[in-house]
Length: 257
Image (cartoon, rainbow, N blue to C red; front, side):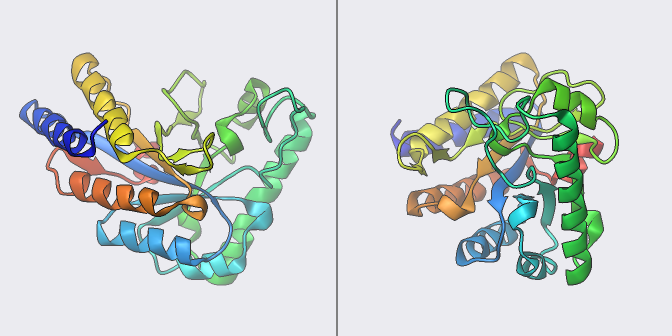
């Protein structure tokens, strides 16, 4: 879709939400964080400048203490556990999964516990607030077997974050993402900005027509962003952050809602 038209349509749809006294809740999840880097610095600056709360899904097995050192002064950042090692255990003919049914559930749970312990140890060593480590699991590749979901209900997890519309998950809170800005099937390039804006507009229209109030999650991966991805985020944060109908919220807020 033409970029100029798409951004105009976005503003119009947000104006309609305001006229209808609707509040659009947005949240931001960035996956695969392991280390402090220039790309992470750029994401932190972009979100900090626009007062956008950021949830970083961190891979425990690869996470560095320098990451926590870098984040401890960033008040707008929270951390979620992103599996254990982001390792695929599915056979080649299946979609990638770390938390699938390909291993005993007890083994998967043991790794998740190890991951939780490691994140908290790194936080302690770096004086990173442990209260900012969420009790939310972000499965690698946004996939998790039902038997693993059942097994993690309760401590230490109270929520799970996947991709797409929320579905019934028993006692677990579900806080999903809906718009991934990276095109993983075509060289990990940014999805064209006009297409991303149109997807968001369609979500807004559905909210207006159905009274659906599920928070809309934006999914990013700072380590693979090209300039088009960064430019889209800058414009999107600018367009939504300044609009009276939009409320950017932290994952912890939405988990309590």
